[in-house]
Image (cartoon, rainbow, N blue to C red; front, side, top):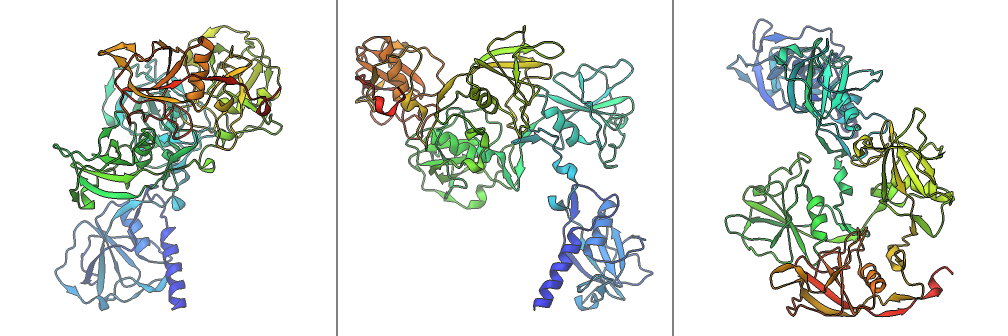
Length: 635
């Protein structure tokens, strides 16, 4: 038994890694292949119409099928232990017992049989995606500094073939690299790093262009874009000698060992300490639509993709939700009760998740799959380490405010000095937090700046002219796709603001102090609640339950943040929280419509479970000044 198992392992291994010269880089034959039976055969019979005439050093299903796959046939057949045939039609009516196809495969294994001396076993030829361990590196091509979460959609949607060269201008930027090979993926991966590019283009077999506008209107036949990609595959074409094929540049989540970058998906304002458990426990597939209500609230967002994590992350912000549901491939719903009792077969929830992994399902066309919504602590090891990035020697009590307030985009390089000190480190990645953390350690700087995707500068004075923000569109080196770190000839400058560190799940807001806060008094937190009220009066959305709104661009919201601002304004009696992030102050509660249970919106960018009003309701609190506790603070 052990010998048979070892033989089988050797057999499978040999098949998996066989590649004939010129075989596709993305597809391989399914092995073992579905058998069409053992057929009577003689060397004179044309049972399958093409014999592969190669000097094979061994024979197997994998060897023969790979050659037939290159010839784009429907079937392959094995006969006499070493002969390989391909065809689109089986020209036989005489099926014989399987025992007649019992000749061991030549130079391969006694376990695998390759037809018989007077019989051919025929198989379906089923192309399947290659296992990445046996694929060309081009399938996972990543230029240095590529985003860690996103990749280009390949194959990409074509916009057509355009006249190019001899003063015919199509896309405005050429990628000047010494490419070892060229393909859609190679070019698109470089253009993805040029944030703002909507298109990429291939010309002359090996040239790569990017841009956000197609400047030409002269479309030519697709046959003019028929030059094989340089050092790649005869199948994939890379434009023509005088033509460029242009493609949409569509960012999609990366597949990391089968998991998507959405494993670290966070909507704006998500809790800083908790995330949904994924995969989530399923409650079943329910009939949905046509007046069948299952969960009460739909999340109305323009989602770029959909998955369990995307939907659950939004529902987690709707405090009080016990369940989330996926329907129609891209719809996301939340609720604390499943209103339907009509469970349908799981097969009805088989719609592929919109713009996501092929095998992931997001409900059905007339069905919703419902899941338990379970908050769990965030796991930083599965997120970007930059969330807790600290260079050696960093302060133990302070960190930079991130995101930092931008001072604008400035012309940089070629004699233009903007900030005086550059941090010379061999950075593994770059982001606002990385650069700001280094500048913070030098204690004397007011600003930090990011340039060229990976360069970090500090200074006290901005010494350059401001330019439009779109020049600062370089993707941060080895970081998240949408994060920008200056530009190729531009630097974005930010205020460097030290704030208290977040220790073991507690927020820096516990010692939150805006500029100008009293030095001796602070608000009592948690504050006594007066209840949940309709936030506006008499149908007028400009007339609030508390009269005065604090007009600030808050980076996060909590009781302490709002109460501290109200304490600074004057001796207000109350403060109120609405819609997760809006803060009000007043001396009179002007609404009498108490609406308990609907003040359940998660506080913006804060700890999970702290509520900041509701979508249509304001929770109002007593504003109680108390002396500051110096024992927990610095002198």
